[in-house]
Structures are given as structure tokens and as C-alpha cells.
Length: 462
Image (cartoon, rainbow, N blue to C red; front, side):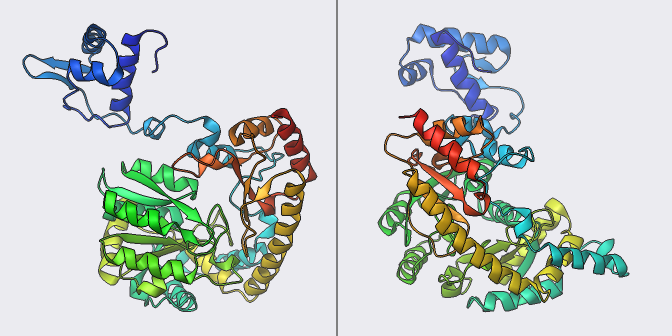
């Protein structure tokens, strides 16, 4: 727990926070008294007293002639202790909790999902009725390790429509897209490895990667894809193991990867051992297909993942991984070790919904609704001086710059007091360089109150 007041307590807090974040594991040798004093710009006597107090508390031990070492068992993992401290309104975990626990009357233009009434509930109900009437083992039995063969055949056809060739043995089902990334991270990463992410990117990537104790490097994102010069420099400087991105509808910007950037990106990746994870969760919202890295690469260095939480149901969860067969076999082993089996019932509900005769027509209507809503919301925001970074071709997101001098975190605090949950830009930014941006979900911006409260909150900062 942080102490207020003295320099001695500041030194103690520094050591304890590093133990809590697992930067210092048990039996780690601490910096010498002189080195700690220099690093914190305090006197040697201050560090001596701080170390002595920590010894008295049992936090560290003194080994005569060898220095000071951490003691005790490894600290329980606390994600809030990893990385620099940030305001709660730009803490990914806090923003997620605030959106998931919001009261029914809260308005959430910052959340990342569609309103329930915009989803294909008719298809879900039809699938539930069908399963309730059947004698199917889907109601009671464990799933096979890779998941439903019928679903994997469906995904084979679906991926082929995006020019990604993946036979059923190249595909495994997961509980969600987040579960897919977590399995891949467990499979490929060790603590201390470097992972590249887009800056900005989906904020839960930050939180999940922190849990795997890796070094996260943000690559500036442009309207056409990642900044290739900065990407190449990061490859040279950090020798990263993984890069996670969206090629289709990018979250939070709504941008599409262009063919030219896709080809150059893969050329850079092939010159290293970098593995790319392509998260394709918004594929069904696209009207204009962006190139897929997995199609260009043939699943050699690219792993394709996806889920249906955004277009079918966030309650009935199912995702997938498509990768080369030997990796799939090892990922299946890891899945069995960590969760034993997938959710057979959920996957069957999702498959029946996706193959329902009305799903395609519903998605066409949804794409049309979103296109109209993007224009409507853009116009309302621009009247307030809030400018979209680009006008996306598809999807639900607008990445918007606030008027000069406006701080998104403060704006979020003010709007939250009026029951409006926003998503400040720095939630998505590894470099914390998006302090004057907000992500808006146009599907969640149908109430005029949102724009009235924004107008009020903007005036508070003038």
C-alpha cells in the first residue's frame, strides 16, 4: 500500500510495487544502497533506513556480504501494479468493468458492442428451440478437443470466402476471441518477450498482454495500416515475437488495411521470426473486403482468429483459431490442459444462428443501419467541434479528435457524472499519446442526451 510523506517511504513504496508487479521475484537481489540512492536521487542514509524497515517487515532479507534480497512467496498477480499508474478513466480494466457493470439506464457511447436489439435474436431463439427439442449430445456432453467438425467445416468455407485456405484440421474452436489470444500468448510467449500492437488498438490487448508479463511496444496506426517505417524500426530494435492487429475493421479507428501496406508488412515480417495474430472479429460488418494477411501469407507466419460476440451474441460465446496444423495440435493440448473442453452448447447455438436462413439478410440490414448511423453521428459530433479521424467504410466505430485544449480523460469524468460512459483515447494508446481522442460506437449513440451532455462537458473545459 502506498505511503504518503517521507523519502524513506517513497523508497519502500518503490521496492514493494516492484515486488507486487513481479518485476522482483523471490530471491531477487535488490540494487545496492548506493545504486538505489542514485536511481531515486535520495541520500544513501535514506535508502539504508528504507531497506532496514523492509527487513523488519519481512519484505526483504539482508545477507551479510551479499546485499539485500526479496523474500517470501511470489506475489499474487495484480494487473494494476504492472506498468505506469494511470487515471482510472484510462485504465483498460476499469473501463471494461464500468461498461459491463453499467446500470440499465446508463448510456454507453464508449462501449464496444452493439445494442441487443440490433443483434439477430430471432436466429438465436430458433436455435435454442431446436436444441431444446432434440436429443442432441450437445446439451450434455463434452466437446471434442478441436470443437464441432460441422462448425470447422463451416469456418473453412467462411475463411475461403476471404481467400484464406484452411482445412478443418487447421482450425480449432475457442471460448471467445480473447480466449484465442490468451492461448496463443501461452503457446508462443515467455515473460520478457516483446509484442507489437497498433497504437491505438483494442484496449483489452494491453490488459491481456500485461498478464503474460511481456514488453508491449505500440506502432503508430495510419488510415492505411501500421506505420511501416516505425514497424521496421521496432523489428530491428526489439526483435519482437508477436504482432497483434485487425486487418479488416480496425478497432478503434475503423480503418482498413490497404493491399500495399499488407504486402510490405508481410515482407518485413518474413525477414524475421515475427508471428502475426490477425483478429477478424468484425468480418461480418464489412461491405468492402480488406486484404487479409492470413490469405497473403497462407497461414505460415500469420494466425487468424475470430469470434461472434459482436455479431451474434456476447452471452453465447464462441471463437476460433486458424493456423498451421502442427501449431493447432499443440494449441489443442494447451486448451485441454487449461480448460479441458470447449462449450459445446454455445458453439452449436452460434453455428445454427450463423447458418440460419435469415442471418445474411439481417447482416445486410445491419450494415445499412450502421452506414446511416455513422453519417448521423459524425454530423452531430462535428457540430460540437469533434472531428472524426477518418470516415470509415464499415463498422460501428468513429475515432474522433476533440477540440484543441480538451482533455478526453476529464471529459469522460464529467460525462460519467451524468450517466454517460465514454472511452478516452489513452485507453487504446500504449504511448499515451491520444489524450485528445475519443472512440464512439455509433450504434450506441441514438439518444440525444449523449450529445447534450457532451456539449455541456466540452463547455466545462473552455
